[in-house]
Length: 281
Image 1 (cartoon, rainbow, N blue to C red):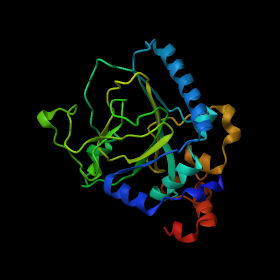
Image 2: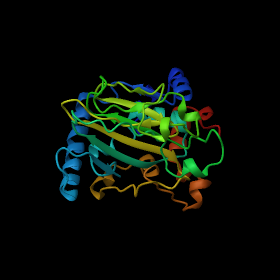
Image 3: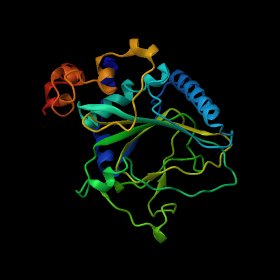
Image 4: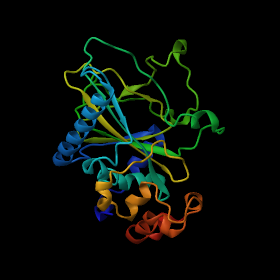
């Protein structure tokens, strides 16, 4: 793994923001070249999905399990200036458990409201504790300019990651929640957010589509939401830590809950490059 990660370790202010608000922003997470390559890959996958599903240009497009389908997107799985913050929050026993990209086309005359939710489906119903454990987080790479409201912005309710349930006015999730805010970020930014955070997409009233890539990281014992597919042409790009992130467990299923060193090469990388105190458990 790229040792440039050490230049982008999680800062104390970021940790505090994540614990307090449930999210934080890293601007300029992508260089102009990385952004250009990611947009090209994004557009290719969207065009393929449109053709598969016979979708029109004005329809929303979602593609799941995209991370292993293009080299430009694979490289963002362990991008130094984001991945260091991921393991700074979750530790070393982690995997890529989900990826999805979303295109929101211009809808200047339509407002379908918001759609507040927490991630991870039935975890929110079946975990009994309140507040619930974090278990996973996402990094959203915003490939288009969302620095102004009305551009298909990601909405969040800061601090709501500690609320297991939410009371919606009139019982309607597509409402404006008091305290809910649009996340305003320029193209190339990354937004880190707790899977428990109540959040939503929104209508895009701008003249350009909104394009965003979401990478979900979780503890390795959680069943992935995707197949975590890897294009075989990219096998040569898989060092041991990427293999861990894509679900490898050399010792078998037991290694997901009680990993040996060979199952979690990220652990020894952190011990060597950050220090033993960073892997105390």
